[in-house]
Amino acid sequence: MHADRVRVAEREAAMAERFTGAHPDVPVVRVAARASDVHDLDGLRQIGADLAGR
Image 1 (tube, rainbow, N blue to C red):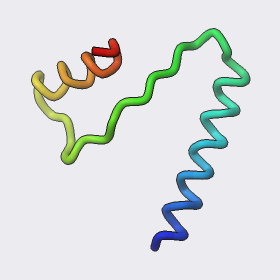
Image 2: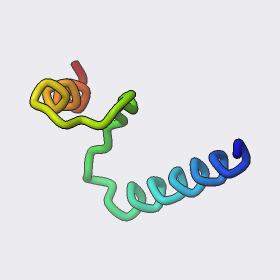
Image 3: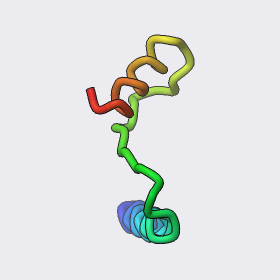
Image 4: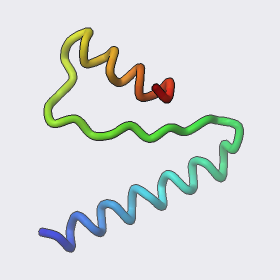
């Protein structure tokens, strides 16, 4: 299971690298994973704050 997650993480990192290489003017921000799905305004506000760097 761990090896599968490592492969997924490596694949996602490579994909992100290709994207940022192809689109260097597009800002990229990492947002922490949430414990559950975001389905309400409070959750969306938290993600918005993360995206804004607050």
